[in-house]
Amino acid sequence: MIRSRVWFGPVLVAALATTLVFLTVPVLAIFLETTPAEIIRKLGEEQARDALWLSAQTTGAAMVLILVVGTPAAYLLATRRFRGRAFVITLIELPLVLPPAVAGIALLAAVGPSGLLGRYVEDAGLQLALTTAGVVVALTFVAAPFYLRQAQAAFAAVDGTQVDAARTLGSSEAAAFARVVVPGALPGLAAGGALALGRALGEFGATLMFAGSLQGVTQTVPLAIYDDFATDFDAALALSAVLVIVSAALLLSVKLVRGADAVR
Amino acid sequence: MLSAEARTEIVDAALEVGAGETLALAGPSGAGKTTLLRIIAGLTRPADGRVTVGNDVWLDTAAGVFTAPEERRCGYVFQEHALFGHLNAWRNVAYPLRALPRRARRARALELLDRFGLAARADAPVRELSGGERQRVALARALAVEPAALLLDEPLSALDPRTKAGAARELTMLLASLPDIPVVLVTHDFTDAATLADRVAVMDGGRVVQEGTAAQLAAAPASGFVADFTGAVVLTGTARAGAAGMTVVALDGGGEVQAAGAARGPAAVSVHPWDITLEPAGAAFAGSARNRVVGRVATVTDVGGRVRVAIDAAQPVVAEVTAAAVVELGLAPGVQVAASWKATATRITAR
Image (cartoon, helix red, strand yellow):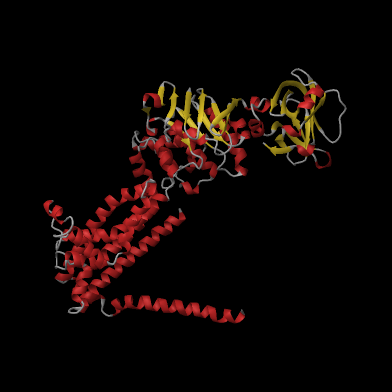
């Protein structure tokens, strides 16, 4: 027993040290392979600017869709019991575990030009394949489940009698939702939003397959990185650096809201 | 006047509470007390029922009337208070005051908080309020809607025992200071019901099994269940140190009893009816039964094999004896008897 104590501790420390080195060195290398001045210069080039702007637009549009439709949907799932609820939740979570390539194929099969609903989409005047709108659809498809899952948990954690109290204090069900439930669940909703945002920013596979990689139209930052890495490694590094910084900021903000939540 | 009746899978009960009156719905958990409150507030919609307050009909299933809870002006203080954690104390109270202009809202909220001695805590976040403070904020918030009726669900159960006695006293005073509206409170504790309410309705299995003043229920319980539920006889007085570590309590209205516990000043002693024995008033002081109260028999009520005997003394006492003892002692209204019990069967609590 005494001998096991002697070796067990160091083994744990060695395992953690290895993990840390393995996970952080590649990320650090992005910044060590180039200089801040070079990063800024590369980001000024047209392709990088187009990619950054397109990523901001499409991610923003996807987040609006996710928040506007996903918030009430998550509330319903969290507060109402109905037949098939568990099945519905599983269906909604499926894109979480779907390989990105499968997500791309699935979108093509559903709303692509010759897909299941392709005709109706075209009739509605929407062009999805190889368009910016298609990028938004792909981002929404892969990122929405991250938000839905968090939002559902956040709403479920809000005490139901708070809604009852709001009702007796003169609020309709919708007003109670807006004035009591959403503020009460806000830390969880923000965390879910940050996770979905991170997922949407990094989306690669489904976008490439469904919308292609046209500069200024469908080429988001991850696609531009892929496009550059063989020809202009420094540009790829610069764009990667941006994604690392944004991702780190998102992670930090999730931790901060979670921390604030724990104090409440 | 609040009148409510409902028949659901859980409850089958009716109640009436006058303006300015407080009715306690008392009973074990699962008796349907909270369900009845929720039906009155409109949070639960029964298939069959009717709720009216004054001239307003809040619910009449026969006529297809259902007023939404937000339109009832029914004050409801929830068991765990249900304060909004993202708002501070005064914003909780101001929640229902949407119709007022911004500045008037805060002024009105402060006025209500001040009434409960909480003006200094107006800007405190909910998580920094103590249990007693939360309850008062919840009460102030419920009153902000200028309710036509006030409902309180287990107002004392969320408080720890140390603050409970003070909170009970405070709540009694607050209820007395309310505008003339009907008040219904739910409690699982008969003593709480007796101290807080004018009338008590004992519920069991979704039904009101007996209704009356606390003294009436203890003296003449309609069933063994009510008899057990009413629990101890409570006498009030002033405690001082006695001989041999005992405490002597001078009862309000005259008489003295001894108890084993320690207390000084205003105190309440309690004894269970089944620990009290009865004997002819002239009998010699017997055995180790050291406390003795003499009075006239007021009522004799059979409660399924046991008999409740209510005795009019300076403070009413209720004894529970066997049917044989009733015959032996010739117990009937008007007969003079002595009730006695052991000092060790006497519990004493500071008031």
